[in-house]
Image 1 (cartoon, rainbow, N blue to C red):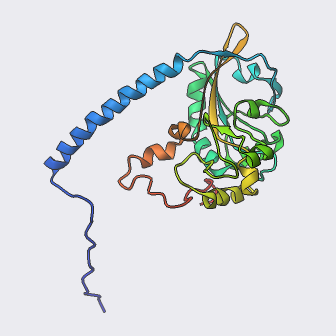
Image 2 (tube, rainbow, N blue to C red):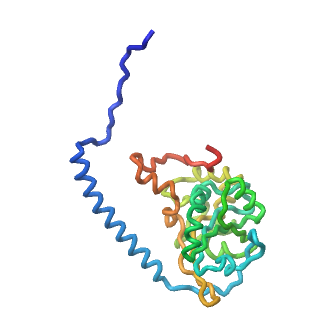
Image 3 (cartoon, helix red, strand yellow):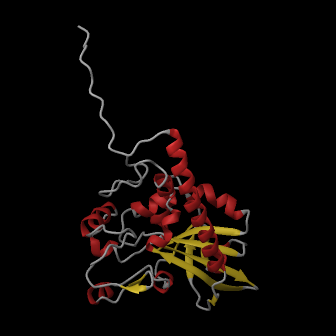
Length: 267
């Protein structure tokens, strides 16, 4: 028997209007978007004008091609962008948030390489762990291990248990309170529950997980000398999350109430 019952149509609570009203509002928003673009261009210029800091310390890394210096990571180019990927020696898998960001690297690496820029991830986990995870994720971008060295410590993306206990962590250019009183995930809110959920996804507890932090650093190689040019952390790397740039333009926005993303092979 055919169901003749009428289905109730849910009415939206969002503001609606005519095409003319939408266009007027869109043009007003366009002016704000243009202003943001101009401000973003100005910020980019100011980043490029930061003074360079010469690096004299000898950092060593393990790569697919063998042992390497920081200069070697440039791969013959004059600029190096490093993504500080959260993958500590005790992790069983890479941070899912960093993994979501890294999903966009392969598409950019080839273009950057032809514009005199090398993009590489660096993590503290031993190279074999990074290689296995890279195969699992199907990634091709360069990924170096800084295991046993000071690179992560010196660029403020690794911290000790003592720093956690005593409140000695300085991350994102400010000192943190002790005992995980704020989120290390680079998002507003997100208490220990959210951090704990993601920590479990890396096979660790909150303390172990948050001894690593995300970030990116830029370096330049000139006349055989490596200089540090820029570093950003926390929400400072928000623009690298390709999916968030799309969500910010979706009708529902980010619409986050919990940790909703997974590694791309876990959905």
